[in-house]
Length: 269
Image (cartoon, rainbow, N blue to C red; front, side, top):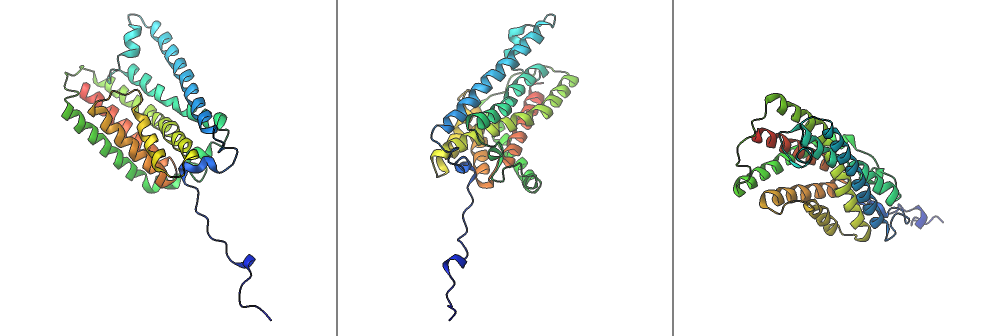
């Protein structure tokens, strides 16, 4: 007689919850060993130090060939209207791209796709659907920075009198290199940090806070710097966790980088 009760093996298996973005490094036991997050971050940081050293040495060599150029001032002045200074700053930030990839691939010894999203790749369809929203959030962060700067009295000095061609060159440099810097920052300081802490902790709160606080390293602890940096870091970390990848955080950070550099150049010029 045929039983009215389905056999256990014929019952549909309960749906498994997808692995969240901050836990992707736990998909394989070899990736989730306790020391792998430390190796990942250490390899990324060492690679970054080596790469920025190369950038600085090449910059000094180029400046040494330019007659009448003060090498020390050219490297350290940080003039937002100087194409050289802006290029150097953005190029150093862009070195986080290879540094993060090296950290994940050779430190964590896992596929690079796990650093990008839960799909193991860059989800272009997500960019098309929500990219404008991420850019809008970036504009809000820039507005927060402008308000914080106005309240603290920063940026009240006289302009440097930069020429229009000089400002246009700065704009071209920013449009080319700022997205690369944004990709590097999100890959390494957001994605790698989130997944490193997420290897040890299942709950997302502490990984998100760590990926937020890391942006303060090396920054001046003033309201004009801390408030927008934390706003951007927290928004990007939450976006990465909720969306399951770095696509929207990259759009957000790129918008902030481009807008802030252009506003600084125009304001100082």
